[in-house]
Image 1: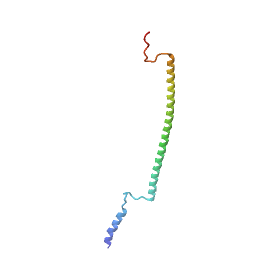
Image 2 (image 1 turned 90 degrees about the horizontal axis):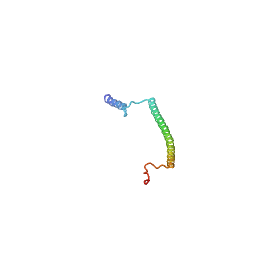
Image 3 (image 1 turned 180 degrees about the vertical axis):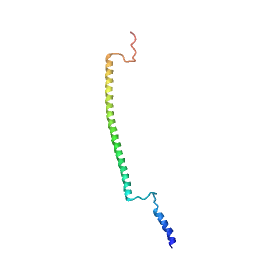
Image 4 (image 1 turned 45 degrees about the vertical axis):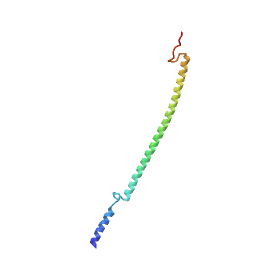
Length: 104
């Protein structure tokens, strides 16, 4: 009877030692440390997200300022063109490309 019991006991011991994840069993302290690492990584990920959001908002703000400055420059350029065209017409000079009047 003892001889038949020994192989069963050995098999039970081998099966009990098998871990389905093929990872060693960790202690409570090891599990807490693992959780701590995972939580730290989540915190780092959150911080990176907040940093990207702040940088993105800064770019949007800068883009808005640049767009406003661009509109001001366009308006200033249009006014300068209008003034120069009006001054040119006031000179009474024929526009470029105009043919001189014939019959003189």
